Length: 125
Image 1: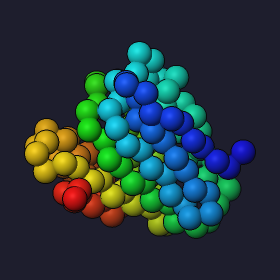
Image 2: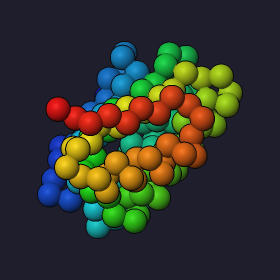
Image 3: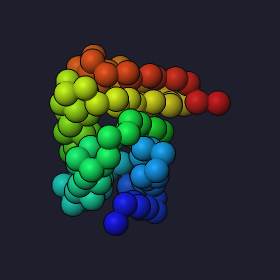
């Protein structure tokens, strides 16, 4: 199964994937009761994509709030992208944020500091 579609809830972001386009999007708040369980399918999808496809992979993020365990899961995702990038894969992140929410900008900027792959942060809207 190459498609991943998770509907947003009050505590989890919506997640959609497009295997053909090499695109994974996440949008909303992320403070699930069990981050390991929530992010498990997302991490599996990324691992499969990086293994089975040679095409570029781009993450498009519009995350508003993330709890500590969600931040850890995102660090794991960015580590996978970094490793793929170090092995010559074309990967990137586009993180869009509400300009009224400086905390999200600061968080995205902290993530970007540890990444050598293209990581764009832009105000949304």
